[in-house]
Length: 270
Length: 337
Image (cartoon, chains in turn yellow, red):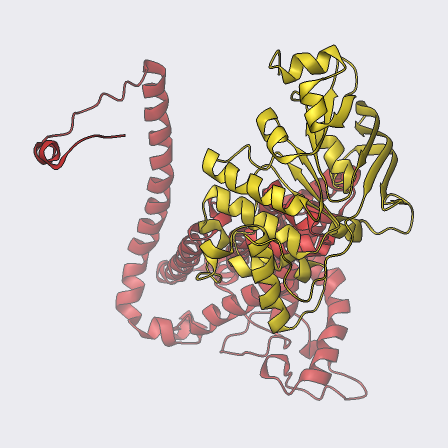
């Protein structure tokens, strides 16, 4: 895979994302509270922690997917390059365009071809593009997602005919084609086999050199392999979830400050 | 992983598979038998109706032969009977009803599934379901007394501006200062409007349930790419629900083909093939039967039942065709019709 960008899409300075005192509710139940996290530009930030501690909810707050759930609410601020994405005047559709997300379960559009899946974001946001630019974008996005060589001869076949790992990389390509400033990933490998997982981790490491990436993972080894910064989430019974400890991945895993973190990263629970 | 070599594979091919005991429990067996019985009884009932109608049709069909299908008049007094014009009338009413019901049903269904605020969603669903519970005679009276005076103006406007198109032509001067209102009353168009009110709730219920089944993952995928609500509907919901949309429409078509009471109230019976749907007069199979069986002789009754048999077969064909289309689509599993 190549790390050089194809002509026509100059490398822009990676964006920073910062959560300030974020809380989130489903109906009347508060699921996360007091979350403060700065996600550095061109860095992979891993969110780790046991199930049900609000990692995924927090991730969905970061690109306003949280509010798509009926009854969901949030408080606090999410700053993209210093600007609050929840401020009035920010359209939710353009926020989601700038902060892409890849879900746990691969979800390509089954009625569309591979190429159409990649450019679906353009169609959905009403962005017009010339045929030549479209072809370039399809190749560039699939290359960055590490899928180009496997599908370049069958771009017009259905995306649902691909294997699970390929579908997930197609979803990454689809998110990248929107040229987001930040890419969020919600346990992108949990439904995949080890070989596909390895492919996707390679992709994440490569993308992380130029992009701001936030990844939720249950796989501690994966957090070590792909991320430079880690945040440990935990929810005490009956309490909302929050960050117990954060730091560089090396430091968090080798010398955790909080005993609960130490317990978790050493495999004590979760 | 199998480690078998070609030598060990060879004898495998000659082996006989074992008979496995499915091991149904007693309660399973009882339930299995009972549900099979009930399932079969619906087939038997439908078959029996078909057989009865078919048997009743024999005298008529042997007497009139092919003329029964080509004749346009229904005059048993002079022994002239044919269902060509009645079949065309039935198709016209169903066509008008589906043309009106389809866009309204799909928009109601989309509004309920994707746009309506959650707190009014359930009241909207019950309101639509209530439409299905209103007796068809009520729709007939509503169509005759309330809708017709209003719809006549629409009929006239259509024939004034689109009269060059054969469906909208009315055989009178549409621009006359004092217009001949009676030429626009009791038309196939007005019947179709009333019938569409009964077809909408059926189509809407099927479509809505399929829209609600759209996989959340695909909806979220579109939303996460920056789609508007309409974008989600266009790229995810509608492609997924194709089977349900066709199924709902076919169900509406079946309802429209068979509707009786509302047609009987509104239409003024007229025979002869006439494609001018805005013009007064027409007839459908079911209204023909309902209007004539009371004072029919034995032979006339047989003729009416034969007409019913033909309608039965047409409806069967429509439903069967729809089932085939739906089974091939992704959402088909959820939309048995």
